[in-house]
Image 1 (cartoon, protein in one colour):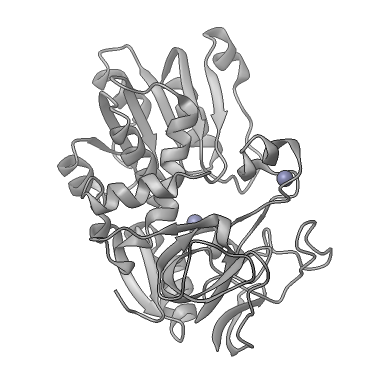
Image 2 (cartoon, rainbow, N blue to C red):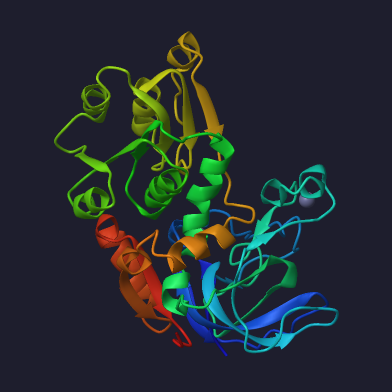
Length: 352
Ligand SMILES: [Zn+2]
Ligand SMILES: [Zn+2]
């Protein structure tokens, strides 16, 4: 079968590899669509998390390995002892790999397992015609939702999970810094949770129409200082909750300065460099920093939101490539035109 295999920095090869065999408790899935995540792009330009020398602590794998953790498909084979799933079922899966034994796993927080791994980073992933996952991590794609649109459920689950961690955001003034797919997942997560008003800040005008149509306020940070914009928008009260979805020192600093006394910051961005954090401003008004790592079972909620039209999934897909064109039309295009895009997907089996 065909797969996009990561060999090294900017070295992703479309290769013929053996079809994987599901072990006990696992299923194999014929992939219909996959999504290119920010983490996939970081690996393309990396390595970042893919083990190249020391084998992964859970899977024992090192590169080369197949990329990809956002996908939809149909079950093609069922391993020993798997119940409740059969060939043909339309599914997606949480790509988290965990030990199942540590304190975090035992308490249900397997997304922060001590040996945490991820499909497509710590073992072979879904940028391939077939992928093997644990049956325990499967989600059925609901009737009425197509395979193409459903591929968005994984990134959207990140914003829903972060919002669940924050607790009560109902009626609150919420700011999202960064209008990429993770920022939008925070926007829709907060909106689903009944946030009062939501302001999104980003560079450029690509997202204004979508944010405003979905009931938010948009600020182009290239033209307006986001902290001043939040001051004016909130009548000087500042924000109850700020999601940082970029991963940069400057936006983390903005997030601190635009949150009100006792306000909550949610860090979702992945930082390329360690930021200097203004702890005095945080401390002077008991502002609280939260962090969020992937998601637990929020893919189920995301699938329902997509099916019900609460999140306009089709609009979030801004480009479609194939495995054969993944490198040039996917990764290289994203490096040159990143901010224009929300989600670039890969058509593999292509059944909807
Ligand atoms: Zn992802
Ligand atoms: Zn664990």
